[in-house]
Amino acid sequence: MARATSGGWRPWRRWSTRTRLLVITIAPVVAMCLAFLWYSYQSRQQEARAELAERGQVLARVLADSSEYAIVSGRYEGLQRTIRDVLQSDAAIWQVALFDARRRPLLRLSGRAVGAPERRYYEAPVVKRVIWIATPAAPAGQQGMTIETVGYLQVRMAPQALLARQAHRFQVELLVACAGLLLCGALAFRLSQGFDTSLQASLAALRAADAEKRQLLRRVNTAVEAERQSIALEIHDELNAVLVAARLEAQRIAALARDVQPPTLAQDIGTRAQTIARLALGLYNSGRALVRRLRPEVLDMLGLRGAVEEMVRQYEDSHPDCRFACQADEDLDGIAPEVAITAYRVTQEALSNVVKHARARHAHVRMARRGGMLHIEIEDDGTGFDAAARREGIGIAGMRERVQALDGSFALASDPVAGGTRIAIALPL
Image 1 (cartoon, rainbow, N blue to C red):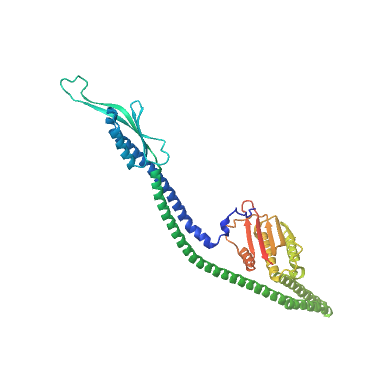
Image 2 (cartoon, one colour):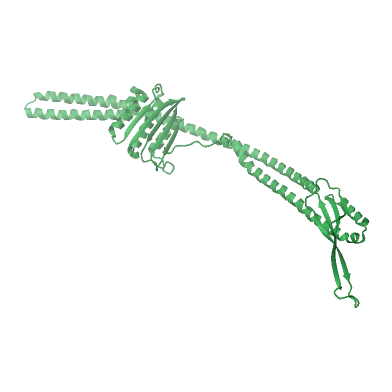
């Protein structure tokens, strides 16, 4: 049979309603802001490195085009001045190096970049172009232009300057985002405050209405039980007394009829008097049974434990197809009459449902007093039903309302596949 299992560790269950509202409001905004900041930071980094690569390639090509004359002539003063001007104007250049065709160093100038350079470098070939003018005296095959690589120019860049500039921009974006988050948080705090106030007022009104409903149910149940007791007393004191008197009178008539003549008339009168006595006795027994249903005298005489045990014994005797058992604590005395009658009635209704619907082979009633609560369990191995899909009947709804009227708890679990139904009730004492 299916039983309720407790959930895992869920700290948010202890949060207040206002805290939950703030989390629900701010969490998506914070997550979106963090995602945007991460994307912005990564894009800034990629943008800086892409800009550095593009600048290094352009510088390498431009300086390589300016180095042709220096390598061919062997004069590097003009090239050095040009490179120094470039180094002064660009703080991201770490070093410029010039090599000959065999990659032997010819010139090496360092810039004012700080930090370590990139592992990669940007290189462009230094080419010499020779244009041949076509003349009648020019040998065949030497007309046009020839290109010859006479050296290489390398540029190494340092990303710290660009990254620092992008970091500054990112810090500005971060400050703006934090300001926006603070504004959203303040607005959410203010809105949650107003919403929480109205929600708490609504919940307080619902609790008050629920308390009034429970109080009304308690009064109704008390009035019903009082009316049942009154009817039972009237039946016991008035109707049963009249039936006893009628039976005695019928027996007296039967005794007097023996002296009536002729004997046949005496016999007929006696027979009819005995019939009236039997009918009166039957009505008396029916009245006693009705009194027990309206107000169980056994509850007043034996207490809750004895009354429940007697009820289970009666179900055991009257329904041999199902075995009924009762397990009750000894310390069930001194329970308030209101609680005792509620416990008796819900147990009576549960066993009635077992007999009517469950087709069970065994039913067990447990009753214990623990921690200021009266715990009642009624369990059977019957067919079971889908408690979630099936609408509650009048009997179950009545049990639930009786228990809730005393601020108790009512739980029902049933399994239509494995079978069995279990009702767990807790009533405060």
